[in-house]
Image (cartoon, rainbow, N blue to C red; front, side, top):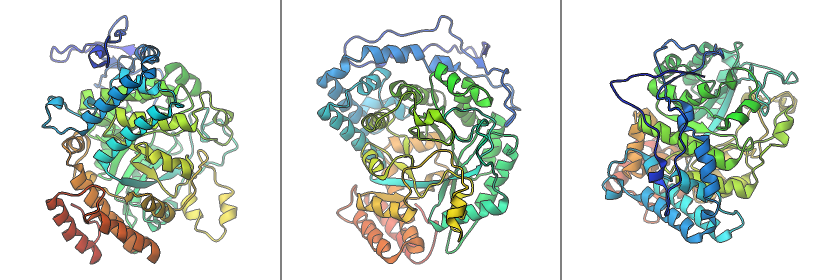
Length: 558
């Protein structure tokens, strides 16, 4: 690591005093590094040829200062006894719930800038993570708090999307991934423009409006190729009214200069990048070589996106690589860092659990396996710790587990997913079985239901399926999006827009029975039995817009 001090207008950055955030009686001691480095330059030892930095003046806060490993381990150790005290745990939950429910006018939150002021401290988070999963009463209290916070902010809406894999060439050596360079048994492929159009068309025919575009890191598929793919995706329109309205991306780390180019496409919503593990020694073991082996460069990706104005960012950890408690605490620290410097934390947090991947023995027997009870707990704690983030639930989990996790605070999920390059349009060929036998996915899936079945299931469980993209398309991103969340205004924006997108889906893609069920849901949510009633003004606006959608207009939103 190469470090450098940078004098910026006389400002001096100081270590964070976490003692003021501790719950209970005595605060935990603050762990400080021997020498505090205020500004840091990324290492030049590892080449990042996929995206070259042209804005070389940028310096950053040393990641070792805000992912404080010693502080995490100390908090996890010192709160083990706290977690056995039901009164202390319930006090943490009550305060978290109260803070998440207040408005900008409440004196409790005077001076607050974002949601992370309203979540949990490191010590509170560690306490909840240390609660015994077999303590049914306390665990139910945690689950109930997480769901109450999610419903207060996001209501009963569940946003749907699908991943779209464009290329599986990769020069990295991630030990848990089928795409890694050393997996010579995998057939490598890149979608041509025609293939890509067919993939997007197949997704649109499922009713999708939002996709997550992914690719590996390799000179065989460059960032220039990806920029072109974004244009191709945005250009596809199918009958009756198919279009992709939000392209989120999960691609290799970009420089600030290339982040700007991505933003300039005016087609990209959230830039998602998983750190995989925030534990440095484990990260080094799991990524022995390749550009991805650079921990600091990777963990600063969201900083570079924010500086480029791409201010909806997603973070995540792959559970199974290291102690789940450590990873959750580290994601809280990452979230706090983003809020502290950019006034907006992560737009989304993903919580994938390791699943078997072709040719990876480690993926079959993870070093730190996470069972179902533990997984439910960590999901709920993240929702309580970072209340306003969108939490993403993938098809790595079974239908039964996804149902349980929705009750722990999840707000977004993939539907009808494939992790194979070219899988969607090959699924629709006459020779389906032969084609699927050649597909090479990044990891195995456990929920294979098509999108229409997911929609039916969600509505039966009491949720409103949503494809809403209104905030992104109206420029309410980053800090601006967080402001309406914190002010309690999100329901009057998001819920009407979700119902409008559901009505579109029902008219364009649902069979008569599913349409009937969906229109009953919409009528309920617009009536006196709504899960959370809209304000009078929002309801009147929704009624006018709904009339337009039923008359055949599309892309209508408040």
